[in-house]
Amino acid sequence: MKTASRLPFPPDLKFNYRRDTHQTPGHFIRAYHLRNKMTGKDGPWLAGMTLEPSVVYEAWCSQRPGGIIVMIQEIHGKAVKAGESFSAAHIVGFFDTIDQMHAVYSQNKGHTALSAAPSGWRLVK
Image (cartoon, rainbow, N blue to C red; front, top):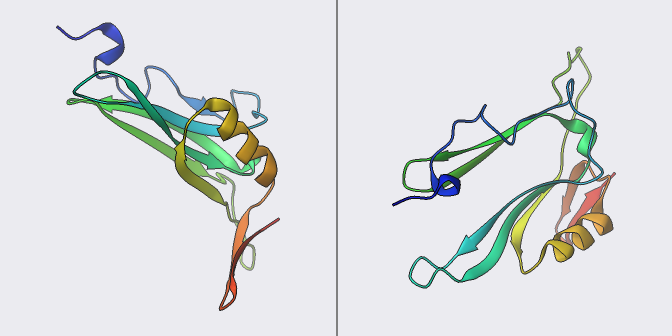
């Protein structure tokens, strides 16, 4: 039998963030703790980070049948005039601990773009 935490939930039931109804968080991290299906033991965290929290307009997640977790974000949410632009930078990866996620976030917070060149890429504020 499935437990309540394992039952599918729609995107508007919980974990819904809106810039117009919530305070902007210091770190905007969405993560899911992976587990070994065979043993039930904890695995790493799969996390996505938006490096400038103020660009997120709305974010939500939902769980689909079969246990699939879907995390969605909408950025900007403001009128854009001709000649204007906006951007967001994200880090997505696997982390062993929540503290590790926050440390990586703190090192990169405030970046909203990526610059790429033959020598490599770097985050840009």
